[in-house]
Image (tube, rainbow, N blue to C red):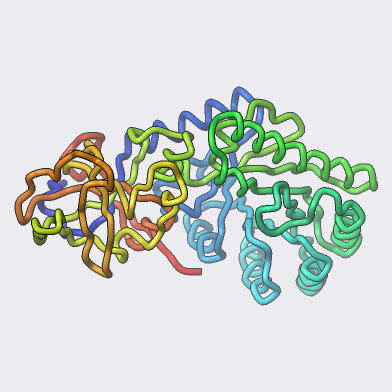
Amino acid sequence: MSTLAQLQTPCLLLDEIRMERNIVRLRDRLSRLGVRLRPHLKTPKCVEVARRVMDTPAGPATVSTLKEAEEFARHGVRDMLYAVGIAPNKLDRVASLRATGINLSVIVDSVEAARAVIATARATSDAIPVLIEIDSDGHRSGVEPKQTELLAEIGRLLHQGGATLMGVMTHAGGSYGCRGAAALEAAAERERAAAVACATVLREAGLPCPVVSVGSTPTAHFARDLTGVTEVRAGVFVFFDLFMAGLGVCELDDLALSVLATVISHRRDKGWIIVDAGWMAMSRDRSTAKQPVDQGYGLVCEAEGRPYTDVVLTDTNQEHGIMAVRSGSSRELPDLAIGDLVRVLPNHACATAAQYDRYHVIPKGSGVVSTTWTRFGGW
């Protein structure tokens, strides 16, 4: 064990109690709605966190890179969905993982991608499980629900060509632009309705569709009805972040991740305090700039974790973070000396965590680090 003062900054802090509370909150909610959670492990990229959020040490889980799939497979996770459209040049890695007994599924949204999967399935004599990606809100990739002929064509190709058609999946990325509970509830219902409608298209075409997979952190927390859905995927809910707080999905007190930084300079003439956490430590994510409350590059807190009112990282260089009072506020900067510690809450937990190779795990409100958990990156 060590104190915060003994850590080299910048470093990544993880409040274990808040994290566990976030996990229980979503699990309980989905249990009441009658669906299981297939957690997305792209945010933590950490075995210890994965074991706390999955139903069992073997899964189920969702991943966003094959590096994640390979790392989690090494630690006993057997049931994973690779929830990014499969690139044909990655199918050899998929086949290699499946050859070791890993039940890894992939997704496609085109005839071309389906044919690539079928070719690998035939070459390896392995009926690779596939879900068809649905574009439920015009956000990104996927088959649009109105493209029923394309959906059925992809389904028939997979089913008759040697792969295993598992069903449909969608991600309501458009929910990240919603404002207020009513809008988030509506986004969740659009997501559900689109996925269920597409599942019906496949079934009416005589094709199997045992899995109807939906999910995003906002819609997972605001869905009122999940009839017809078999599983929900969500990821950033484990840590939450300022962007999710800005959407109204969580409160500041739910944020489990922060960056510990040290005061290294003052520019009193400019109203600045400079810390050793720049964009390399926080990431360049400025997603809250489009929200009613712009949190700059992160909201600054006392070393113990209590947020200062209206003090943010207003700007960053590679290794310098500029603390200042939010524009329009009458607050004053805290009286901090060179060497004092602060914590900075991130805009986007995934992007900030990606800058680090470990979590320093702390009890809530404590200045003591109980352990470190390894984090990995790469593709």
